[in-house]
Length: 321
Image (tube, rainbow, N blue to C red):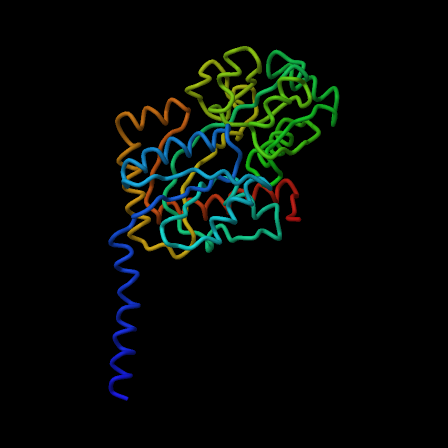
């Protein structure tokens, strides 16, 4: 009996010590970062820049894994279901966390309780871009055309659970216009259809569209906030669309239960990489203002945004499906 008790105590002590030891040597192998959208868009590009710097800081590869689907819910669910051992992290966005619960009653994760917030990487403005079927050279002409053809001008989104879709609905309300919606799986899939005229408009972020605008392949009509990449494009406010000034954010999360020390180490490494010097310039060159708040501050941002976007959805009479 005494020997059995001693063996049990030794086993329990070993079990208790194992997580601590695992944290001490973390990371000892590659980390995967799940991006819930396809390659080629702004979310993917931001993730690759951030994970390259995190690789340098942690000393192990942080490998991007694109898991698109359902406006980002497929990849985000994969992060939520992973083990909280520091070897699976994921890109969170304004769409996947504060906005998705507004549209989906059957959301397979809770934006707050299913994750450990690590940090908000940065914010980027929105730009309304159009292709040849938009049929307008500037924003006033575009509004006139849409008003003359209610419900006929087609706009794209990367899914009905995204902030871009919610804001386009808000733009319709504020501008007194009505359009037709076509959802896609990612912005990189929208651009060919914008350029060939299948769809007319997309409310997106400048990193994915600025080069096409500069090359004359797409037209930028207005921005929600001043854009480094599109400095010549006027704001919606300047055209009389008041209160349309939202930004989109990219963040980093892990499954719920990640040891706080791991989250803090990643946040501190990213803050050191991007709040000054070449990393800051690299982010700003993509029209992203780096943020890198603490995990606790990022958690508050998610909670506050969830409340704000839910209020907008109620104003638009949007009910979860």
